[in-house]
Length: 420
Figure 1 (spheres, rainbow, N blue to C red):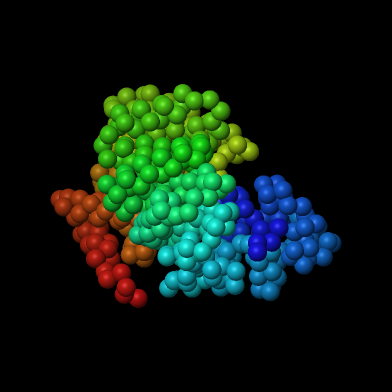
Figure 2 (figure 1 turned 60 degrees about the vertical axis):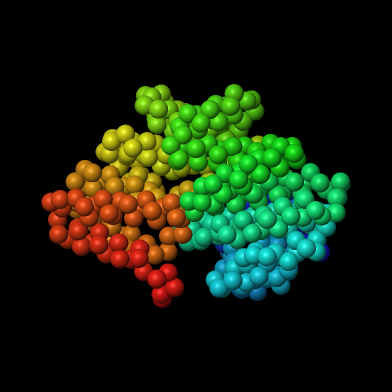
């Protein structure tokens, strides 16, 4: 049975909550749990077995929790998965997944609870699976989740079509399933399984509309617009973006990402000045800060995200110096949400430096890439980097040391992924 102090999955998915957990900033975490989940300080303190005077100090930002036993107590009271606090899997996690080869993580593969749970427990099992998959997708340099996400959704999809009807929970189950299908659609796209991604996106959109979940519908449409643009269909990306921007009551962050989609479509259509204005509008919206009506999935929408898209537009249009400025800003900025595809900025920057014949800067960047290149999980990023390296190796008159470094990256990308 879940304790009354368990943090809801949508609150755990918030960027500010994730950051507090990752930093072991428990005072900030308690503040956010009270703010977003409505759980009082007294209930949190009692559940975590923290004296009121000590709890008050933590809430004021004074002191910290460092003992393993107490951190485990907090994790169990608030139902924080062990891996997010760098703990071993907690006893209550073992029913929702199986431990994989990465110590301290739970990966929902066949998700046995799907065949056991009913009603709201089933809804929670689906949502917890989505949350864990998203965490893995953004861990390290992005762990491959496409196959696991697709398998998990197929299990849900099969039950939706043939299982016992549960009218009381039907819409909640459909909404949770839509979110899981969205995660799978994104992961398949990042794995360059484009046709499969399209199928999962369509199913996600169908379920979101069946359930009436407008929030997840927005995320699915955002993904579909992005994928259209990536596959060379800018008019489609533009149309999707404008269909959403015509609606009312978008939070600033949601409007910002659709302004970015619109700008991408404009850039690819040759309307550069209009695109730049839209990117500027998107950044201004981000600077308005977070709002209570921000959807939980909006944690990754940031200035860095917008910069990356604008840099891509500059790169594709041959404005390499402008792209370099934005990409360097992204790479040198320690703040912002961590995403599994962040190495894409490095790959794009490398391409622009090679075009500008900035040999020394290109070599320095390559040297920083080599140690972790074999860990890049995003297929899109790996292929972008692979193509850039091949382009560099094919250029005439580059310094020999740079050619050697490019070759080193090429060799690193060909290594057996299971070599230690």
